[in-house]
Length: 92
Image (spheres, rainbow, N blue to C red):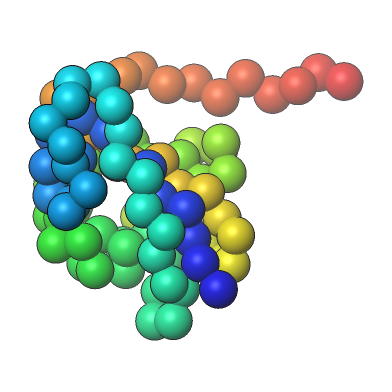
């Protein structure tokens, strides 16, 4: 059982998959064994929560306490890539 985790910006440098190319994300498949929340992913990757700007789980804006499950896709962005984000609900 795995999670697909994409790291953006300078967070990519924290993985062994970082290849030095700018603008390319690091994509990791992480075993979900002891991971229950997004914060557990950060702990596993040795990323401090103060380095994070925003998180998306399955394309929805999420927080550190968001529960994750097998097959979820998580995007993690650093402070240097911060944005103002407003989720627009589908009116249909």
